[in-house]
Each structure stands twice: as C-alpha cells, then as structure tokens.
Amino acid sequence: MKHSQASLVLFSLALALAVPAHAQQEENYDYFSASRTIIRNGVQAVLMCNGLYTGGRTLDQVYNQELAYLTSARFGGAVGTSAGGEYVIDHDLKAVAIGGPTTGPMVRAAFREGIGCVVMAPDQTFADIDSLPILELPYAHMDAAQTLWPNGDLVEAKPLPGNVDAHALQAASDWAFDRETPEQDTLSLMVVYKGDIIHERYADGIDMNTRTRTWSTAKSIAVTLIGMLVDQNRMDLDAPLGFGWEPNVENPQNDPRNAITLRNVLNMSSGLYPVDSFGMEYANGSGLSYWAGASSIQGARDRGLVREPGTFWDYENYDTLLAVYAMKRALGGDKTYHEFPRRALLDKIGMRNTLISADRFHDFILSSQVYTNARDLARFGLLYQQNGMWGSQRLISEDWIDFVRSSAPATKERGNFYGGQWWLVPDDRIDVPKDAYSTAGNRGQYVIVVPTHDLVIVRRGLDYGRQGFNNWDLTREVLKAIGSDPAISRLAN
Image (cartoon, rainbow, N blue to C red; front, side, top):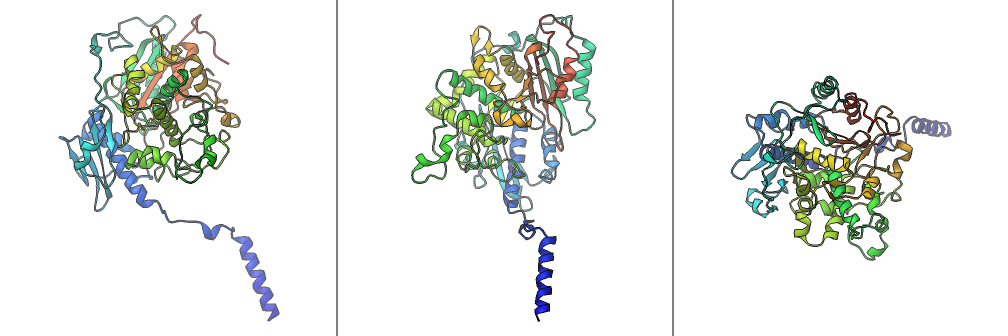
C-alpha cells in the first residue's frame, strides 16, 4: 500500500513538472466574441457610410477598397457584397445599417453635416438619426479654385528647383504606388518643397477632393489643438488632467490616477490598464466608442492604474481621448468646444475639406475619426514645417513643436521612436534626417515633416491585411530627389 501511494506521488510530481502550472488555466474560448461581432458590423457601418457620403465613393469602390480592411482573420470579411447582403443603405437619410440573422446585431451609422458619419448604439434605429450631433458652422466666402496655394487650391506652374531631380522624384512616386503587394494600396502622394507642391499624384478613382479617414494621424491634429491651449496657459502640460475617474467612488481625491499629467497621456505613457493592445483592439476599449456607439469619455476614464505614470509606453487610443476630454473642459461650453477645431486651426490654414468626427454624444474622436484629403494634410504638415507660422500669424509655439518632437522618456530604452502624438525617426535609422517626424495612421496615413530639407510628404492609403508601408522608407526615397542646396545641404544628427 505504501509502495502504491509512493508511486502515485511520484507520478503526480512528474506530471506536474511536465505540464506548466498555468496550462489548465489557458482559455481557448473567446469571451469577447459577441462584442467583436458588434464591432465588426460597426466598422463596416462607419467605413461604408463615410466612403459613400463623406468621401463620395461608389459602392463598388467602397467594397473593393474601404472594406478590403475586413478581409483579415480578425474580422472574417465584410457583410455582403456590392450586389447585396445583410445591410441597408438609405440614400435619402445618408445612412447605412449592417447586420442581420446570420451576421449579428445591426449597427447603424449616419452622415451628419459638418461631422461625417456618426455610429449609433445597437439599440438605436434610423428613427434616432435626428438626435445625432451636427455642426452648423458656415465657411467664410472664398473661391478656393481661384486662391493661391496653400490657402487655396490654385497652384502656380513653376519649374522644379534646380536641385530637384525630376527623374528621381518620379522614381520615388513609382516606389510609393507600384507596390509588390496589393495590400499596400496608395491613394495619393504629395511632396511639398519650400512651400510649393512639386509632386502630386492620385490613384484611379481618387482626386484632390477625395476624403478618406486619417485613422491615427488624427492624434497629431489633436495635439496641435491642445498645444494652442497650452500656449495660452489654458492647459498645463505637467499638471494633472483634473477630472473625475470611473467608477465614481468615495474619496475621489485619493484616486492614484489623479497623478496622471497631460504630458503622460500625450506621450502614451499614462500607466493605465491597456485596452487597445495585446490582442484586444477590436474587442473592447475604444473599439466600443469608435464602432459601437459607446461614449468615448466614459470608457476612457474607466481604466485602473497599473504602472507609475510616465514609465511605460503603451499605444492607447484612450490616452489621446483623455487629453481631448481635458481640452473640452478647458474650453468650457459645448458650442465653444464643438467649433474650436474649425475656428482655431482648420479654417485658418485652409483645411476646408476636413471633418472632425464625433461619437453620438458629440465628443470628438480625435484619436482616429477625421476625414480629409491629401491637400489638407499637406497644409497641416506645412504649418509644422514653417515652425508654427501661417503667413504672418503664429498658430503654435516653437516650444510646443519642440515638445511633440522630443522623445517620450518611456521610449528611451526602445529607440526613442515616439514624441507627443507624433512619431520620430528611431535610433536605428541612419538613412533619413534625425530631425524628421511623422504622423502615422492605420492603413498607411502619413504626414512627414523634414525640417532640414524644407520638406513635407503626404501619403494616403487604403492598405489592408499585413499592411507594412514604411514612412521612413518613403522619406528616404523622396530625399534621393532633393539634391545639394546650400540652405539644406546638412542632415540633422
């Protein structure tokens, strides 16, 4: 008996050593599958709605390009085809609904004046569209076609500067458009040198007026607006964010999240629990506000602190939205907040084709949901290339530009690749100027500023699948066309 018991103990010990302690706790069931289905339908609703009514695309174009994003394993494909399926398109309402008996809960999105398409909660119907926000803010009268670039769209015919190699510039353009994989789908490319457009190219079906989603390039627009308020001493980069957190409990003054500063969230180093990374991008977190009608403000404030603020870099959409909420509070009234992007930035630099989209509560989703065209993004990049000046007016300070271009402390050991809602040339890249910096958005949205070369490069894409278009490789290729110029002959080191 004792021998049998001893053998059993030895067998159990051997089994324990052979099988990892956590093996029986591995979860194979996707407990977020229902949420992922709702979000998948919402992604299609927003992309289809904006493709049709914000971008002016045909349904075939939307399915062939905008919705190609849904072919990855994460989504399992788009609902239906351009010939039909479990979706409804109401052209009178400028709205779409995605879902049905075999594809899951119906999610709707509707175009709203001045904003773009707003996603609705799954329990809302087209009858609720009138409750969605709009922005009725007229533009100043101006004939853009007869107004010179960059304030307007009239581009003077000029010969290329003597130091610009036309053949090399075309080769860079071909490099951007003629990709080895169809998953990298370049829509447009602009090169602005010393303030002048020296190259502009569009794919078939795209022109200078076509608006597509910026994805996370919107974050760089957000930080610009926030910087304006910091410059005016209405926000403080190193002060706590200054709002309440969720859930609302007793003694909120003792909440450790009160230590998080504006700098922390703009550096993507809040220390809050990650919800947009580690495989959860389209399961919860900001995905619910982007694609399923949840509040962007409530969700952003409902994360616990897991690290000391400023010590760990984690790319989270909600970090940006926390900064945007702080901006809203600094601006005061709703009307001021809703009109601020237009009045403070977009209208002043001629970005008249740009829509800052919002959730159904009219809180700006400035971490991703902006729709615009290549020329407006070139104007935006030009503002930075001109050190915050537009004509004779300073819109953002040089101090703020220095901040967005300074590496986040939490990236020091990882290559110094990120600043304040802008991406930086990582330490291991030695083939492009170190002073270059770039926006970056999903599906290949880039605005690249190269100060030493008076250069702005804009690339718009509808990449899908593995994607992988590299902004610094593009910068390298374009720079091959910019030859020796006494004013810019050096590279920043």
